[in-house]
Length: 318
Image (cartoon, rainbow, N blue to C red; front, side, top):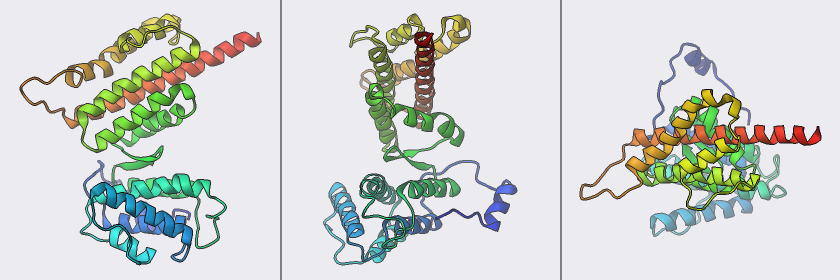
């Protein structure tokens, strides 16, 4: 359904009374209610067998992964089932996020692929998968809860500007080419690890995604490299082959230094080596910086690759 901005919401926005920062620890009851309505609209009525199958599958996966001894909905209708999970104030945030990610994965894949069974306007289905995901992300943002559903998973949003200008375009571009498949998987995994507080591993996957992207570009271009080449050597190849235009070398010297000493060095100094006798803790804000740096660098390199491809096509036609 179309999202309607109420008078009170509009006044809050116009008065600048929106929260300055995102929060991640509480899923407020109004947001839970809105998720409840989105699922009703996306999956249809309580008597639809296809919707029942999806809810049952999601619930069984959730129970299995958290080790619950409840393996079914025990005959509860979908409405009661959803209320027990989403609207129960005693259900914690992690459980809610697990459920939301699983159910929206089903909406994004199963419901999308079975469009003949989930027809908008039939069996209570009112919105398409794209509309459901769009509204979910809008509701998260509206409630200042820092998560979005992107590329089949929930990702944490620390800066709406950085997310819209770097992270989201990265996800979109990484899916466009088979050469970027490895980088896409690793960058998604870095976000997943971050969400699960596995900070050191998240930083490691940031570096892997950067290296995989450059290797993918090298494969696409036929540029030689060895499997043991590290980030610095791979980035040097980008300059060597003109991925970053040589006539802008002076302007990009600082950027080259940032790419080489930013993401790779941050990772090498904090996450790439043994921690010794003293247990090391990687601070969350450092991991956030690494994720944002990686997103910016991935986006920049992919855009350079597109420009290189465009210039090559123009030269070929001429």
